[in-house]
Amino acid sequence: MVPQDIIGYIAGFFIVVSIFPQIIKSYKTKSVKHISILMLISIIIGTVLWLIYGFMVDGMPIIVLNSIYLFVVSYQLYLKVKYEKR
Figure 1 (tube, rainbow, N blue to C red):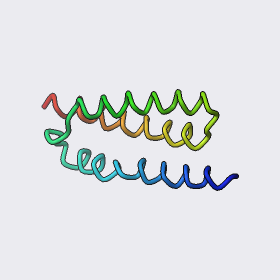
Figure 2: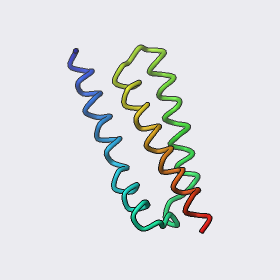
Figure 3: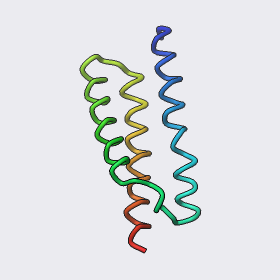
Figure 4: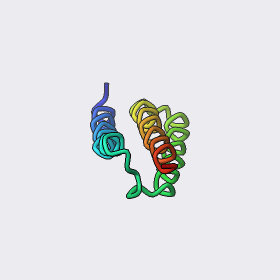
């Protein structure tokens, strides 16, 4: 593994982990009023574009971490839709 890949994995790890407190809070409180659906959709679009770029340049850190991030942000979007109906 080359040094830039290590930096890529570390950076991606911190980006993915950064959303976990929000997901945990949303899940525990069942409150998502403070979360913008447009923000979540923008993050999802950006993440999909990063994934496409990752495949184009064969960047494994980009592909791996953005795949995980896409799943995590999609789960937050799911919570937003589920709990906003209340």
